[in-house]
Length: 138
Image (cartoon, rainbow, N blue to C red; front, top):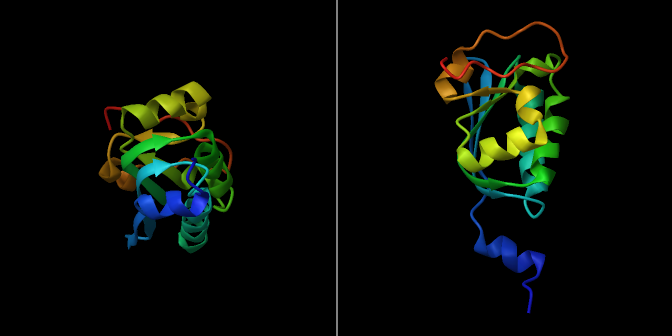
């Protein structure tokens, strides 16, 4: 018997671990498995963060174990809520998340930083088009 969506939700950790404002940026810490079952919760948190942010949303992926294509789409959608889309930064992806970003090609459209600190400190490029991949050495 396959568990229903409600039962799956009860067995899983909440995907949005923390949302904090840090020097004008909104930091959203995500964790666990991010997929179709919790996409709505993550979408709501990221859209709200984008609306609250001055110019930067940093998505901390350090505790994320898995991300599916639905959540990759949520990242793309959420970023459209910022005036400068380049202000939507991804930070600390593990191997599985980094691989999903690379296979999907989204690593070429988002700034991906090795740490939250480097994302918070990064100079933002002007404009609202796609960002560039951040230098892994920063």
